[in-house]
Image (cartoon, rainbow over all chains, first blue to last red; front, side, top):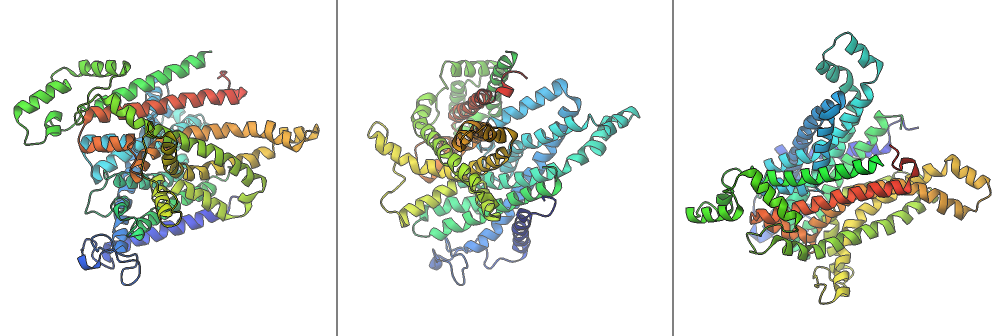
Length: 269
Length: 314
């Protein structure tokens, strides 16, 4: 019953597709220049020509949301990639070799996950200062224990299979066994986790930027827009609503995609 | 009983590593920390004085031992900005943050479990994607935006109450509690959706289990089957999910404080970060991570209480 493409997959993929389209278009075209200020046109409600209204500087909110997609996807993609690379390498080491290596690495993951929510990222930002690059570093470190855990448990399970034993017997090197024989089996669950992790990175980046400690102005970021919008909540409610709705839709898209992929790739469950 | 000891050893080890990490991260500040704190215009004498105050003239291991020794005695050092002990500042703001997190937790349990049971009982999750999307929204809505939405709703629709102004506990504890309910709800509501999803799934799965059929077979009343047999088994995944949520709840409370302008630990932390008040940041980070580590231990113990199968045997 679950082998067919689920509706979550369709909706998730559609949402993610819309955001990818917005991302690509934003490189060539935004309705208005992103940082162009028009003091005569501050706080215009949604309508024409400003689709989602204007902000406290008279900037077009829709254009800034479009440009914000670049920031969100840049931070999300890089932190998931780095976190995944680190998590897979360490998880493979721990899972394959076991023993003390495994114990130390698992403990490292537990320690980092002890910092609730964006707290670890906040600590990094406190030391190296706010900014896009430091946000990516912080989110990669926060993300890697999750990937490490999945890789580790997969390796522990699969290394007992006879095809791995066979490869060991004929003298294939451990690195090759890990990369060619074990890792490919874990790609589906890692893909699901990556989609989920991307949603998590979007939320974390928005949270940090909302606190004023993530992406710095004038670079448009959805979280940063929410930060700036708050002072004008009653005067310009659309300014607080639009970036929030876009953020929620993006996170929803990646979560549904992750759910759908799980149903599609893992029919056992 | 070796697993009890094992758990406690892991707990202590994690606490120690958290303290080490919190300490080490602040030692890799590019450049001289005292110079960084004071800015480029500071006089050399000022820098030297601050270095001495921070203990930077001493070797690293000694500084760590000094700091951890203080923490064990409940002293987190002195805030550079406020010129006060870090502990006093933290205690004052925790009086706001911990109640918000605690209230949020209570709301999640009180709303999530009954909702989940209802959804499971009437097979609402089979009503298609709507259910799935609504619960997925729960994971997608960040608590701070939920808070912004609530602020907007109170200002435009329900004008009888204006959230935002925190009344100190000493002044009027009832008013203080009331002012913490909106932020707690903002943290709780997205998580309620998540818990509802888990409870309803567990309900449907457990309903088909053999022991339920046996219970009906031996003539037990519907109520008895549901409340003594089924609910007990559902509680196991619920405890797991709630345990995983504790970090999120605390982390969410930190950010939500900004929305409602609450003088809690999150605001203290953000201010400390912008003023590069390192002793204060260190203290807050260590405390919050310590709380999460402790709660995880607690969940582990609860888990074993609810499930005899994993009671200290492995």
